Length: 109
Image (cartoon, rainbow, N blue to C red; front, side, top):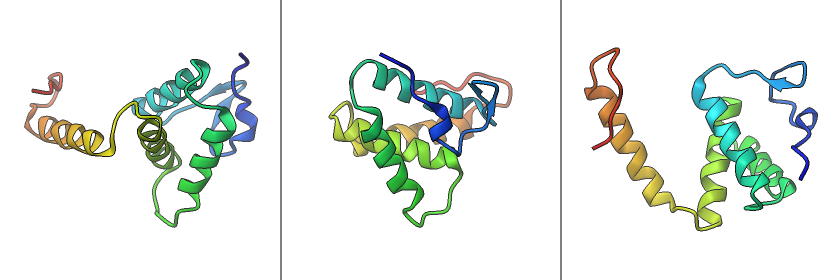
């Protein structure tokens, strides 16, 4: 299976052939998406269609904000998780992040 052609995704900054990310979570979301595609969970065109819907949704967020929202939707559509489960984990993560002193690892309880 060939890796996706990043030149077709204009919102991804690149240095040579490699993507460049502003935050670690962007790289993680990108890597999860590529891994799911490479493992046959979805076709790249299916992913591109969902990402395009997010970008054109009228919701203002960063490119990778759209990317993450599309990833959440496709994993829910493929029954790998559910939107309520994702929402709960996000809430727990935010609470843990607020309660964790700076410099310490965030741990979900």
